[in-house]
Image (cartoon, rainbow, N blue to C red; front, side):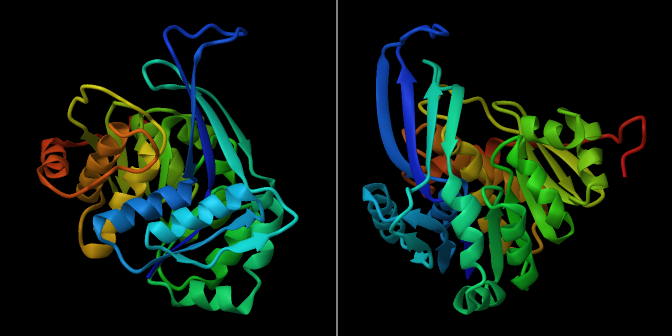
Length: 315
């Protein structure tokens, strides 16, 4: 079983029409979907064929919480989440420009900070974590929650960085993380480097031996123990919505690694890129499908280049 522990909440995405004007009212439309780093990645892994898949999260006893619960069930995920009747379900609000790029985001996620770590003390959840074949956590969990999950886990742990602010939490369990997924802004928050081999060397120095670092439409940086590669995606004609693309890459990459444990990380990332591009073509945080010729064509079109060590000498 793949067990995810972390975000499952409401995503409210504002799409601006035409040019964006800072400090002014901008015409556009607001869409509401269910998202969260862990939930998005689990849904993508399930869509790719991973199973069984289950979720541990926390939500309020409000209308948003009911929508999240229905989405988890519809995705075919086991739901081990806690419901707090006196709390508000977490939400994330983002504003996107006409090209689909994010201008700003607001995370209202207090329930993860206080309620979710407390749930991990329950015997049933401790046993579920210990019996899982693999664990996925995200940095919505505070350090106490991450340490609890790592302390109970017996299988590999995968992690999603979430944001430049929250990624710092993951250093507490770096030695237990099999693979960490982040973008270049998050890598810079950890290492003060936002590009190529120096940044990857900084991650290795912190204890992250395997890392996948995205950079928008640019190459994905992959550190796999002593090797480093760039995986370049094919050109994408149009972007509908960037929400969830990084989570999709994580979920599909994890699926590939669990299906074939001997697979090189950079090869697994090729399918992750295919899932991400399928998600970028979809409004919402999860692709409509990962079957058929299109994802395979994207995967096959990805190119892999081995990176040379930095002049300072990467570890």
